[in-house]
Image 1: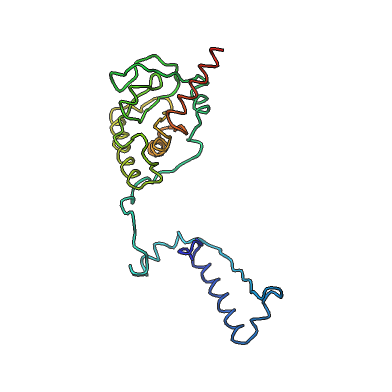
Image 2 (image 1 turned 180 degrees about the horizontal axis):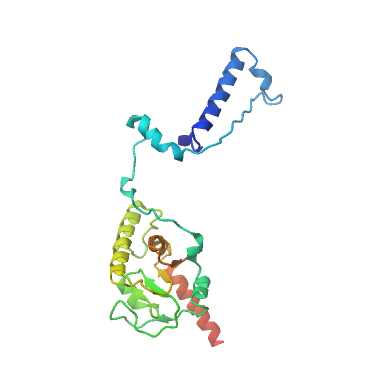
Length: 239
């Protein structure tokens, strides 16, 4: 039944088998037609799905041979992206400003000579920018830090829609977070706000950081969402 899209366990299968047995008995005794709808002639049946299959999977693998299972595809994803996700960790630009104590983010167009923007910034969060260095250098949030994540490219598909992108980005993020952690980058710091091109790589990175007990958030829509919000605030301030 699970292969047909009805995710349930063996007790549900036994209920279905009981229903089929009953129908066969009624058919053999020529009593089946009494259950048909008068107007359509169809017989409607219901059986309960009262359990899930997950707790039985180990037993299935122990008692059944390999030929009883479909071949595993995308085996490279085993051990990849095993962390949890929470909608509350994915913020809109407005919610990101609230996380920053209500202080609007400011953009800096000064070319960054290093991975860290040296411009003063009114920020209560640590901002980690996952875009490519040339894009960071062109424009970034004041006081943010460029991660130089190799697999985070503009116009790439979402890692949640592309297996190769997910694998590459997850491994790059693990290396990045490991390197930053070994240098004490996350010790005693404020919440981490992650920025990328679309928000999807940042959401994946947020899960990795949260798995390491680091308070982290991503921004829906990525850097552009923050840039648009900053531009609107600047226009309002002028008027």
